[in-house]
Every structure is written in C-alpha cells, then in structure tokens.
Length: 181
Length: 205
Image 1 (cartoon, chains in turn red, brown):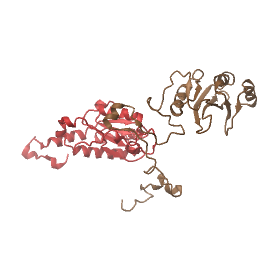
Image 2 (cartoon, each protein chain N blue to C red; image 1 turned 30 degrees about the horizontal axis):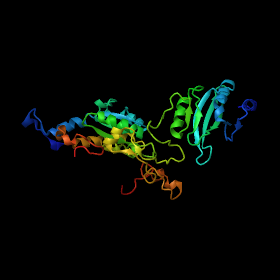
Image 3 (cartoon, rainbow over the protein chains, first blue to last red; image 1 turned 60 degrees about the vertical axis):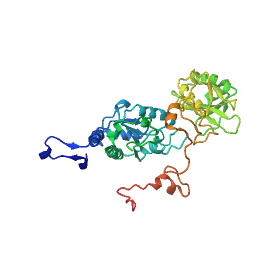
Image 4 (cartoon, rainbow over the protein chains, first blue to last red; image 1 turned 90 degrees about the vertical axis):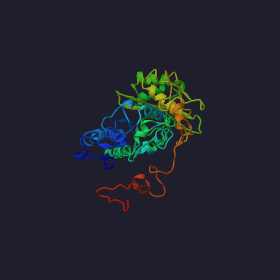
C-alpha cells in the first residue's frame, strides 16, 4: 500500500487506521492473486519454473495456482493459442469470476509469435482482454515475475469500489475492453 | 528387406514396382491391392509395425494424391515404404488399414484432415487436428499457408468477440527474415539486441 493512501499515527488514532476503500480492496486483491495456468505450449514450462523453488512465485503472494476457473482470478495464457483452442480459452475466461485479469505470456500468446499459419490465433487479445504482455520466446521466469508485479501495480490503480456495482450497460463486456477505465 | 524377400513379394504381387528412394526399400502398390499387400507384409514378411501414414499432393499432376505408408519390422529392424496412388483426383480415397494395424486409426484421420484423402472402411473418419466444421484440407498445394477466412468454430464466441479465422500476416514482424542480405545478418536471431556479460547494452536503450 502506498503511503498516500494511508494515514496512521498510533499515538493519535490508537488502533484505528484511516484509509480509502479502494486502497484496502486493491491491497487485498493484489497480494492474493490466484492464477489460472493456461499452459498451452513451452511457455508453460517456464511458468512451472516460476512456481518452483528457484524462482518462487509465492514470494509475491500468487503461488495458489488453480486449475478451476471458478477459483482463479488471473489467467496466465502461456503458449500458442490455436483457433481450435481459442474457443476453450474464451470459455474458461468467461467462467472466471470477476474481478479477473489476463497475462499474455510469451510471443505466441501476445502476437501469434513465429506461428504465421492457418491454425494459429495471432494474439490472444483478439478474443479476451489482456492486461499485461510478456515478451520472450519463451520468457524467463523472472520476466513472468516482473509481469505479475506489473499486474499488481495495475490492480493497485483500479477503481474497485465503482466496479463492485457494475452498470447494466457495462455487463456485456467485449474483448479488448480495458478494465478500470 | 532382403533381396530374396523382395523377389518373393514381387512374385506374389505382380503389380508391385520398386519406387525411387534415397533411404529404405520403397514400393509402388495399386490401391485396390493395398490391403492384400499389407496383410502379406505383416503376416509373412515380419513388418509388424505401421510407423507412419501420410500423403503427397502432386498439385497439377494426375494421379494427384499418393498415400504413403512406413512400416517397420521389429524382428528384422528394417523400414519399408509403400506408396499407393489415389485413382480419383477430385475425391481421393484409399482402403483403410485400421483392420490390420491399430496405429492406422489416428494416422489416417490426420491424413484425411490435412490432405483430404478418404480412407474407406475407417471406423471413425473425422478430423483430428482441425475442428469438425473446418471446410478445407490445409496441407493441399492449393491451400495458402496463411489460411482462408472462415467463421470461428464456436458461434457464441464469434458473436461475443467479433472474431473469425483470419489469414495470418506473412511479412514483417520480429520472427520473419527481411531477406535483403546474407542470412547471418537478416535472420531474426541476428537482430537480437539483448545484452549480457559479453555483449554491451546498445547505446540509448
């Protein structure tokens, strides 16, 4: 939490901390990201390495990889998305509960990468809104960790209280729409 | 395959001819005799393993499609290639080997999917890589590598995202060679701008 969003002086306020609802909600959310590992190709190996002891994604509070979309709030698309798989990726994204974020890990998920062919979706952002892109083929685990920290920063800037009560018109979200705007 | 075995096989099937090959023994087989020949290969000549089923599209020639089979003998440790031309250029078809070799099942589905050769007698001749409603056979010579625009397999996802299967861009981008000089300088890896202990960081970045 940033110092500008918290005012605390133990001598004056005792056990009371004064802050903003947005700051508290975002602070909770950014330190308990539950990723959904959408491992589709070799990037998934680096994703697994990021979860292992050497790189240890749990240092940043996001080690609880959930293979059920109902329990996850951040989809890490790690690998080549084919047109046949695009449907599955979109459906799993739809099944994730709000709020949810997407990290496009590696060249393939971001742009189609080296697969310029009839079978490959040229970037997963064509079917789901992406929050953070990671370059690399595949990216190093450090690059993924950096992306996840960038995602935490992004979560920290969201207008969470407003988003708690979505307007009717906004309920049908389309691909490419950015969150918190 | 030993010379005596080859002579024996050719004696039994007079239509068999030797096929030009740079590695293993290869034979041309008439498609109507394919089952008989393969049964003999499996039962009498020890080719007990079907390693690969694929096909060739000869484009403008006729016969246009050739089915290719690679066999392996686990007792003699030898490979054998059998090729069978499809008689029909428009609706190519071959007899299915699923009754002889279990491995033919998925291989024939793949060849059907990508080349459009129909295997008669196959228990489940559906696409294996592309989705069921896909209208083309992508490894045919008349199919562009970039692809052809078709609707996404799922109508509801297509409606929500406004996406369709689009031809992929074939030029530009970091993964394509600019092809305007020697390969050592134009291949993507030559444009690597990363830095490490031995290579200094590019100025101003």
